[in-house]
Length: 291
Length: 283
Image 1: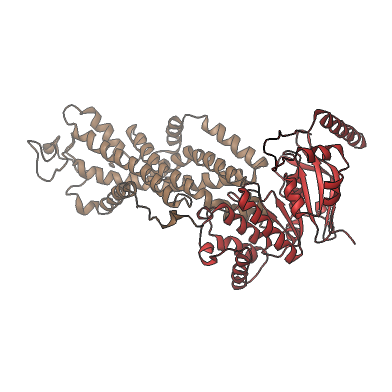
Image 2 (image 1 turned 90 degrees about the horizontal axis):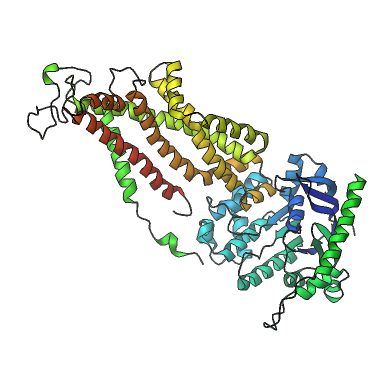
């Protein structure tokens, strides 16, 4: 089976030379749901942003390839890039509060994308919007369409963002910690919704999260990131049953046990961190010598 | 799940009513000044000099707010002065707003070398003391209405530019901008469709604030005789003339001052009030 999205040796750094992503390799099959886990600052969001071409200005891509739809995205001119990504990929952002434009009503925020960017007819786009809101189980679409984002609850907004991400039936969706800003009860509903939508549309999903519990529920495979480097790349079942890397093992042990609230939290031990950092330093040296 | 705020009808604030009312009143009396005022603003009548306002002893009918030392009617001159003040306020602030907003939003959104150039220019510009800068400009351009307007625009576009740039940058960092970008909307489109509506409340506040400032700058320039020609009535000119006779005829300086005060206050309050109306979250 040929790969759907392939990332090869992707390296990203800050303008002062500090490396943010260290030669990332990753391969997604069509319809796969892959988790991307790591501590905060490990660069997991940056991979998604690099694919979508929305890296912050301060970061630059030093090397690597992102092969999507048979083309290396990083070699494309910016308008071709936008065309491919705009039509085939979408983002479910982290914070539903800032991810919807506060000045526009919900309806236009979904339809405008279809009309302006993908050239749909307006009437089709409106019908599609109602279908989508229905699909994400919004009870009162008439009212929601005419609401401003601040008039809706966090869970509602996240549903709308999901609807809007799936609007153009993209082949790839990058979910950047879509449940982090929500409370636990809503998290569960939203996760279920994303999973349902993914299955229904056969979308390939790159799910960025720091929650291994979430990964175990909805992903088939996962990549563990530490300090911008892929530490382990495996299927979910083998990760939870027999993690290979010592950092992965430590990470699993560190997962809080809800069944025993009195137990202490177990941090990743110093020795593990030292050894991982050493591994990264060696890789960096090679990388510098290779250039 | 829709919260209840939207069903609570917001009151149309006393702030907007009072300030808007005053400004509307001012515009009306300015438009109809020739019909309202019984005198010619320039006509001197030395036999009717320093007449007190109507409620005091020695007042003469027709001179409601008294007359100055050359016998010119104070009310008439305030009304005609309001014409200059309002014209300057509207044109100068609109031009300032356009230039400052366009540069600010472009440098804030695109960043890079454009931002570098615009920001350094603003820094250098702001290092000049504004009033001296204005006086210097008028000295070079010569007096007249156009010169005043140009002077105000030249001094004050930096204020807009700074604030709008900062606001654009903070909006540009929001997720909705990244989403729009990922969806394939071109940069210019994002700037106009996504960012501009969110910067609009700030623009409105600054614009009305700028109108007030324009009125003050015009008054300052006429105070130092650098406004339009000295025989045309301006508030600043009246204040300056009234200053010399403040002990004999206080009304010559007090009434223009009061008018100026209320006008500037109204502009700033109107801005604050309108901001609440324009801001989708506060609305």
